[in-house]
Image 1: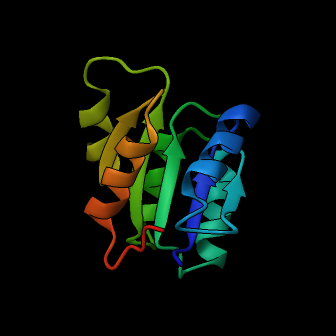
Image 2: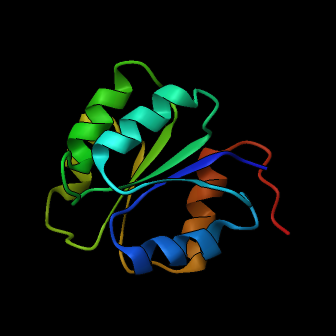
Length: 123
């Protein structure tokens, strides 16, 4: 099983992500803002994968990613419902490994997980 951090301030989106990743991670870590994401990454250096929402309170996903990159090299996937031209490039520039726009399918997420993680188990 992988250790995954979901960074999502929208309750419904968080619930959906938990369901979508349950075959890879039974008990994901959850952050509802960028400050919590940074803290959880510091406290859990064994995180394998971060699903980082971009638009959040306190510290947005871009700024949180920059701070996390100061000490951590985990796989970070930017995710956003507000997809604009250039967002993918901006996410990569601040340190995200990849980018996905909402809504995305289970298959889209599975392909990203396979692309960025080794030895992923799909049940």
